Amino acid sequence: MLVGPPGTGKTMTAKVLAHEFRLPLHTIQVDRLVTKFMGETSAKLRQIFDLVQNKVGVYLFDEFDAIGGERSLENDVGEMRRVLNSFLQFIEQDASDSVIVAATNSPKLLDRALFRRFDDVMYYDNPTDSDRKRLINNVLGAYLDTRFSWKRVIAGSCELSHAEIDHACRDAIKNVILSDKNKVNATELLHTLKERRDVHTGLRG
Image 1 (cartoon, rainbow, N blue to C red):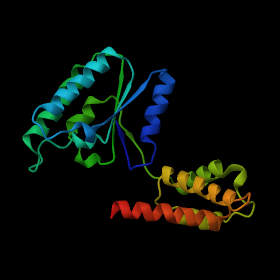
Image 2 (image 1 turned 135 degrees about the vertical axis):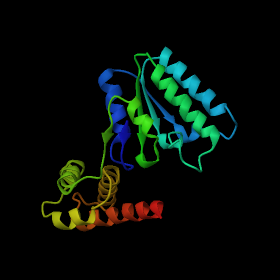
Image 3 (image 1 turned 45 degrees about the horizontal axis):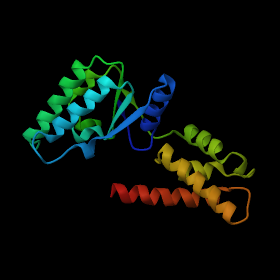
Image 4 (image 1 turned 30 degrees about the vertical axis):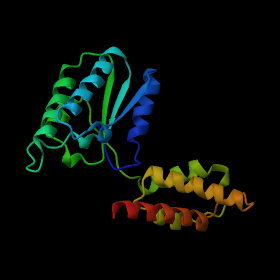
């Protein structure tokens, strides 16, 4: 099971697993799996686990908290409890050679029984100061200004995810190319980092 905020590498981990095992990656968007019709979600789950059995691959259940909610929650409906019970039974009975991965941004919403069904639980977090510096350096590469103000950029990238910082760096590179420049300075990167932060804040708000 992969646990952590958006953009911290959960999906990439599933891709790496598929690449290393030389298996196809199948992503199941769990929130799209859930329907309002009684029994239909469990029936879809059964079809997926039939595929898991018959077609070896890496199966990523993304946004897993959509069906993995704590069964004891008072506001949980009986149908979702049945869906969760079905998933627990399917994964417990699975004897295939496939790799099943579940990813969630909200571990507190998950039923504790789920964690016992997975061999490993990996926790992800937003990058540290040194992580952010290394990431920015790697993405900007030859576009990095020789007089780059790291102190300002490290402070300006705080609390952003790996993916948000990566996108901000690539946006900054596009901007300097369109401006007929060949280097990204701190001011230009701080501008695109702020744009990503505004999106981040808007989504959270």
